[in-house]
Every structure is written in C-alpha cells, then in structure tokens.
Length: 184
Ligand code: GRF
Image (cartoon, rainbow, N blue to C red; front, side):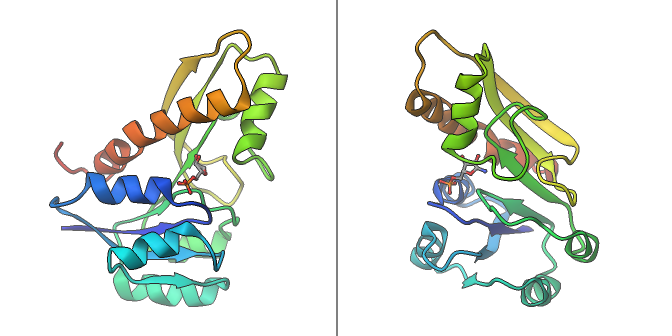
C-alpha cells in the first residue's frame, strides 16, 4: 500500500479526481492539508472521511507528515511556496501540477486564469500541463511529464481553462501512479 498526502488551496477538483481514480487501489490518501480555511479540498476530504486540516504553519504540517511518513506529497492547486527546510525534512518527493508548458508562464502569481490569459496575450500556438518535482522555487523543479494541446484562433480564457482541466484530470493520477511505481 502506498500512502500520499495532498495539499490544496482551491476548489479541489484534482483532489476529487485523484480520489475517484484510486478507489479500491493500493494507494491511500492519508491526509489533506489546505492553507485556506474555506477551500473545497477540506469539504471533499470530510465527505470521504479523510483527515483534513487547515494549517498555515510549516512546523505543524511537518509534525503531521513525520507521523504519517507518506510515499509522496501531491500539490493539487496549492498556492503557498514550499520552504526549502520542509522539502529537505519531509522524507518523500513532492510533485506539483501546473497549467502551462513550463518553464513558460510559471512563477509567483501565475495560477489559474492568469496563466491562461498570459498564454493568450502571448499569442502562443500551444499550451498544456506540466507535472514536476517541487524545489524551493515556484514551478522550477525537474519536469516529470508534459502534455500539450494546439490553441485555435479566437480561443478564450474559459475555453483554454476547460481544455487544461481535461488534461489534468486525464494525466495527473496516471503520473502519480507512475512516480509511485504502481501498476496500471
Ligand atoms: C489546477 O488547475 C492546477 O493546475 C493548478 O491549480 C488548479 C487547482 O484546481 N495548480 P483544483 O483546486 O484542483 O480544482
């Protein structure tokens, strides 16, 4: 059995998707952490009886992680920067999903619709998702996986958001599975 912990700040649609994908598998989500008290992630976790906490200080998070000793920490829409000390002390890799083809359109403040707006303003012909290991800089760790899509004339931020969400839902659980060395 592999154990993961998920950190999220937003709606939690990736969390929900990961939970659905791994139902009845040998992966268990042991804990959900949010830095936002009203994050959808906390509601989703509660509905599934997964321990979940609104925590804002790294010392408390680290204590909980030390007890669980997860195989992987997954950032699913987590907006806070992960401190170097936490990365070094948590005892497992950390992966993040970003809604652009990094290194383009990443970094501080680049999340959600802002990313898609920048892609459209930049007249890019492609966008996509990046799943990467986390280091102490925003969106800069080693890339594990990217999937791209072609953009079309007149594409709106909302269109792009829908397309990117489809990619996230299809690929994030599969990449998590692969990083953990689980069978398909
Ligand atoms: C996703 O689009 C992800 O790429 C980004 O934050 C968003 C989180 O959405 N890092 P949700 O909370 O999973 O619905």
